Amino acid sequence: GAWLVIILPFCISLIFIERKISLRWLISSLILLLVCILIILTTSRAAWICLFLSIPLVNGRKLNKWFLNIFGGIISIGFLFYLTISTELSIFFKGLLPAGIWKEFSTANISPRIEIWNRALKLISEKPLFGSGASSFSSIFHSETGLWQGHAHNLPLELMASYGVLASLMILLPISFILFRSFLISYRDSNIKIKRIILDRAWVSSLLLLFLMHLVDIQYLDGRISILGWLLLAGAKNIIVEKNYSDSVNN
Image (cartoon, rainbow, N blue to C red):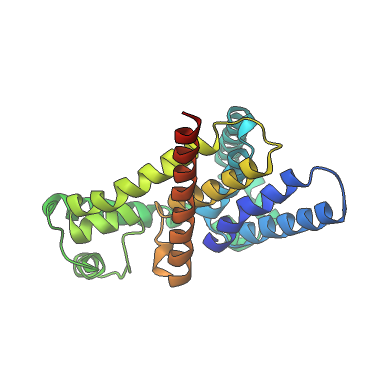
């Protein structure tokens, strides 16, 4: 899911760049469709959310309108799910979706994650300054519950539990600043027809979606994703550098 989410904004940007219907536009549309289908089939709830967010992020001109439509759709789906969960209609809806996808909506798959985060917060509160040591959360969680979890399923919580709040902030704050600053720069111009602006938004959107996915899991443990994440961060930093340089030249 993380791999697909990373490339999704770039697939969307190709659609915006090739506005006229052509062979290249059709191929780009097909690739985008296949990526979306594959994201759904991953049964990753974080990837599903990023799928909904990707289009309004790249198409910043209608950002507010897209967000209203998306969250309205999510609320409608959630309300429909609540109404049908205890009725005969739920059997009908279960028949429309693969069992693996439907299972992701069950509370049995949500409650354990919340329990993991609560224990991580408890561990941080006990040793907030220096933490409990590298990769200590999994062994402590196992000793307390008898269950095995490789990490805290949240990168900031994992860092704070392992190395303390101060060391974690020294890592997280610069990354957050680069992401926030590059996001503002990429959306300063509403002219979506400019190719450079589209590509900058796709780049920053890819980094933002990867950042959001690390709030519910730690894909960084995959070396290939971690390398790609640093490349995206370096590109976002370059967007800031170019903006500062252009401002200095104009002044």
